[in-house]
Image 1: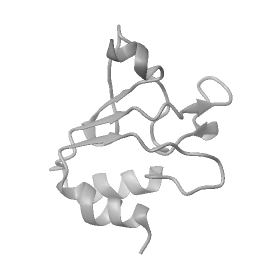
Image 2: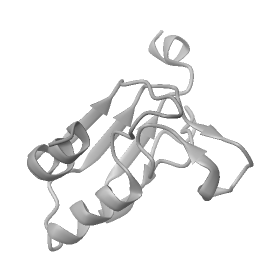
Image 3: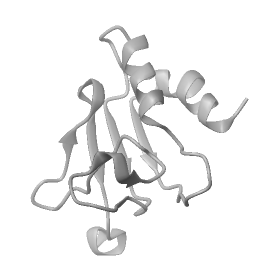
Image 4: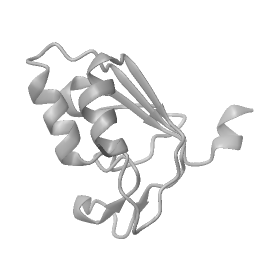
Length: 108
């Protein structure tokens, strides 16, 4: 059983919020893939508990702007950073997603 499988299939269906602070590098498995989040949304039958995700890992890298196929990060389905003026966006299944690119600046 992989950690990703454990999170997606055993833990995430019971969460209401997830704070991701795990860094990611190329060559390592993702924390959650697009396929994982799609499974989570479909298996919830419209009653998904996971309402919000906060990603403070600062590892989102987009090789070309607006090119979802080239997004790299531990939470593969997150394709952009949020800002102070726009602190969240709606993600799969209606969950709210917020990311922090420069964590120390945001916390002061």
